[in-house]
Amino acid sequence: MHGASIPAGLHPAPKRATVAGILLLVTTLLEVLAMAHHPTVATADIDHAVRRIGELSQLSGLVHGALMALMLLTLYGLSEFAMRRGPARPLIRAGAIAYGAGTIVMLGAALISGFVIGDAVSLLPHDTAVDLQINRQVLILCGILNQACANCAVVAMSVGIGLWSVDLLRDRGTARLIGVLGCIVGAVPVAALLSGVMRLDVHGMRTVVLVQATWTVAIAAWLMLVDR
Image 1 (tube, rainbow, N blue to C red):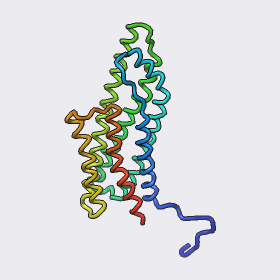
Image 2: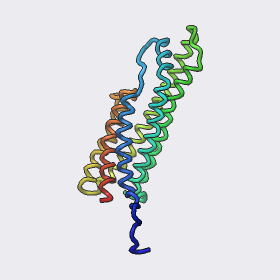
Image 3: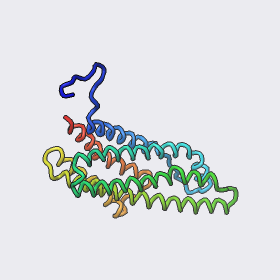
Image 4: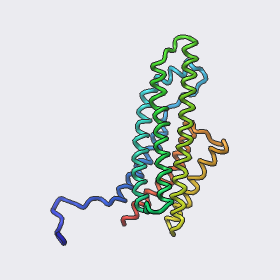
């Protein structure tokens, strides 16, 4: 009823953009933290590598599972940004498609790195020299698949950020500044990958996550200001 007061003890639901902004801020910081704990195995000795992968499989699964959940939550938060900007805008719609596709492909990279490799090593025998050679070939194949997914995902997500940011350049003030930042954030990883300056190993992915985090945090702040 118009003019009716809110019953005692009840409060209006938090504004959607504010909630999305807080969600983006928290998930971005947690993603950076999770990447800092990403397990690595750096050795040319296949026997040692197989043993270390087995020892780290549980931790790897936990870290990658957390990263997958955080990526989806980030996508949800950014969907609110896209809705606020207007899905009827071609750049916003194209950016959402590119970033969403990149997230899906990155989930595949995380599945391979966090679960497939560990399970493959645990199921394959590694008692003889022939067994170890087979292990090496399987790990190489998994590595190729992981890199292909990661490269495709980073490019697609960077394109999405770039398209969204070009749309922000149409505004003035803070939105335009975030647009300039996003154009840089979108261009740098793609340029680094195409030039061969960066490879998406664990160190490379940490760099990409940190670079993209600067833009995502800025979008989180923008969303929290929208409802004011």
